[in-house]
Image 1 (tube, rainbow, N blue to C red):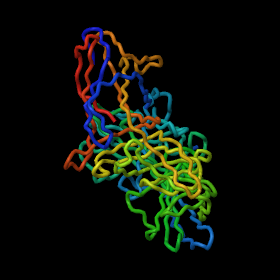
Image 2 (cartoon, rainbow, N blue to C red):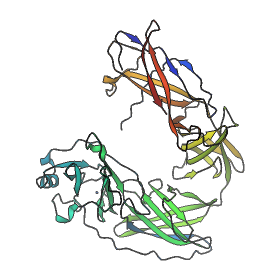
Image 3 (tube, rainbow, N blue to C red):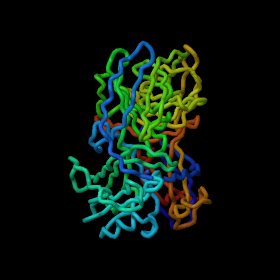
Image 4 (cartoon, helix red, strand yellow):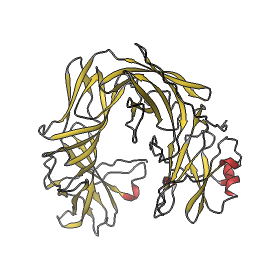
Length: 467
């Protein structure tokens, strides 16, 4: 947006729909100038044999799961999980990578794509026809030469609309990670179609493999599954580097699986267990997981709004990490939970709340205060009142290192605004939505934005979405 004369950004009139107890009314808010700059696999062919885990009877002591690798079939697989990686990296010249050079000579139209986690096979090729992806070429054995089995065709998918994505699934192979480790692996490449054409962000990479094992826990058949979070070396054999799901319902995990970050202490159905990892995820090794009951001290944690404790509120996807031992982390849903003693930071959570019901408003929160959990005591985290802040910067300079936040701009300047919401204790709130009366879905908040000059004359008015 631009002005015809020298313009001072003096005021924002925020018309906020009153709800959720935040009680924000029309107000003239002085602009706080600040900007948040978001800067957004030797490979040998590996054929996995389906391995059925033997059920291990639970002894009186530890419970053992011997984990085996399994590649999944695609996004319709019951255990599919999306982590959605994309890499906005400029492609190399064709002669820089022999594999790419050989492949593009076979294709009339193509896109060179990148995954920075793959040490010797960063670059691969998607062949296009009529602006649709028809083949994916990936250097499975990492020899820099094209082989026939390295042309991968799209998977069959029930989604077949003109704008639906195209998906490619690799066979199982040995991934050499960027740190030099070799691990059995499989991934999915999804091609999304945009009105503006294909860009690097149109190509989404997802791990497509799990480790799974069965045992007997509390007298019930139980399945344990590890899900890869990324493409790194210690995907499955380090705490915090993968997610897990545990299910005692006949050992079956339904879609979608409830997944939590792998931790050295886990919580399942109200019982805490120590979790030990033995072995490594390698072509000639498997991981053994040992669970034994946690017998340490525990306390309780409550979360509430400090400024309006009478609000109805529900928390979900709450993630906390122990400050002195980052191998300990938990995920919860609800406002009150039992936690092993220690000092924790709350990484993130999703909140729904309201006056009449706990479903009128919703938002996500990060950077919540740290809390100490003491034995047999209740500790409370109080979320402070959110405050709307606005950033303003010359749009042409915002991607430079030395950009300045301004309140005064020369005429014809295009101004970039970014609103964000912080709590008084430094919490960062995002995805703020409200649910209008009789609606089943949440709506983004809109406010009126008005810019006036030094004489108070209005020069710009528009709608501003935030949260």
